[in-house]
Length: 216
Image 1 (cartoon, helix red, strand yellow):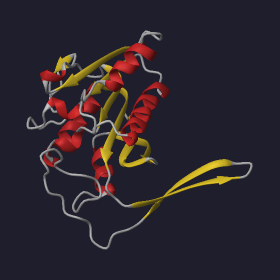
Image 2: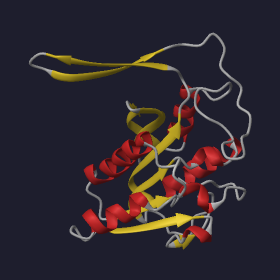
Image 3: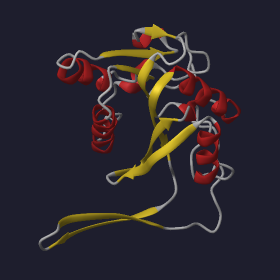
């Protein structure tokens, strides 16, 4: 979760307001989606505050002898490798899973396809993305006898998509004018990935996940 924009200061990822309850729930999904794929090698693109990679290294990957590397353009965040998602210093198919959480909106959209192509190149099997999605939803959470808790995200369409203005961090977001979900899906598929699943986090629907399998 690191900005590709050098204007973002590292302290942004360590202040008290950054790690909200919704973000911690998103961390759970970020970690869980990696664990479910049972990889031997993992690349996390974007260090952020280091929570995800540190948890995986200390609580999970060490026990299963899994190697995880982090890559970030900002050396001040102490990644394992300093580099850009647009030109990653790794050989083809170096990692079973490439995870890239809340990163790609920090680069200009014209470079989105190039970033996807690089992720595809260094991935051996899977990639996991999360991207901001501003499409409105109504959250419905009910308890059904003998079934348990059921959650729905009900779309609330807009007559006009809001325009996106660069805020110093995000160059674009899903659901803004010119950045429809279908357009993003098309770009992902053009890069060669099959989308096995996409979903939004119920407690934090601003984060949309994409579970991608590399088609060879």
